[in-house]
Length: 341
Ligand code: ADP
Ligand code: MG
Image (cartoon, rainbow, N blue to C red; front, top):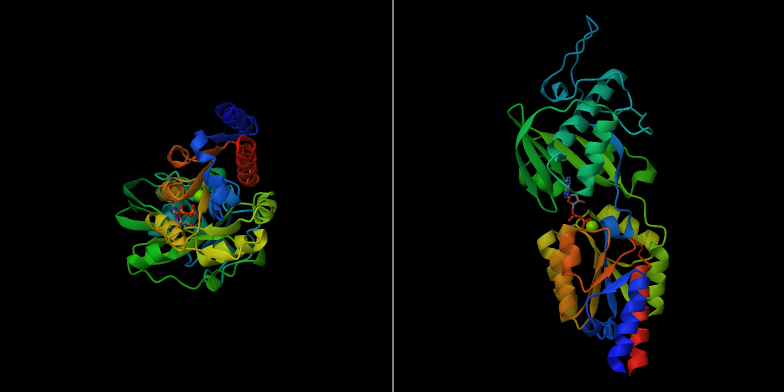
């Protein structure tokens, strides 16, 4: 009777969008006491959008013949008639750039340069930036020598100059001075946004605020897990501020932010060393090693919208991109175990 019950249990789970790799996995759902959540694409929607572009320097222009000429950076983004180069909420001027025309031009060049370099990346941030540039009909310059640094950013050469796009630490690796976020003068609603810095020739020239809405059921999922005796933890490569903003909104107290892809696995291993039985839910290519580690003494779950590597590494695939699928999976698995005992 036992194998039949297992089949019925996993079959029922599959109909609810919870694909369990094998019956042996059910057992680990009993001991789980900690669930580690990935942030981007898991607690938040997978599609990110550009919310604001800030230029730190004005792109010099000459106005004598109404013709706009520009220096290196601005040359990358020839202004078009389309003025929605930046998000619609983009009206405030930047303290650093003088004159509205110069500001717009400088912002366009920041966005165009970033989009050019991001063309080589599949990251949700890259998709957001390239989509925004396309929407603004920006002409993108030619680039070469693309490199991607997992969990940090991307770079490429444009017009003989190295363009670097990514997190603060990434630019700092090249000795680039990155101003405080406060210098960007972002509106309150962008507190939780991911800040992508853009540098040209070793100088920070701008920043792009990118964000994804929180998934509507994220908070309920954390609450349901708590009711099952499972404590939630947030693990992300994103910076402390956006990580804390998401954690606060969903009711998570424990946050590991700014963790490089290679170190995510170590965070899980460290939790396991303190005697925790960890489950992890992730979706990205950068989550695969941590998911595999979670499966060693616990459980790994991949969001169905995620990358193949994440799904491959996971014990359970949550076919619905819904955080509630995580507590559901654990409830079904535990219920199945009760029937067969
Ligand atoms: P997460 O854990 O949120 O899925 P990742 O490990 O994929 O994050 O990336 C961590 C951080 O590295 C991002 O928040 C971003 O700051 C930076 N980053 C990664 N890839 C890119 C990219 N293609 N362009 C710009 N920044 C990037
Ligand atoms: Mg992710």
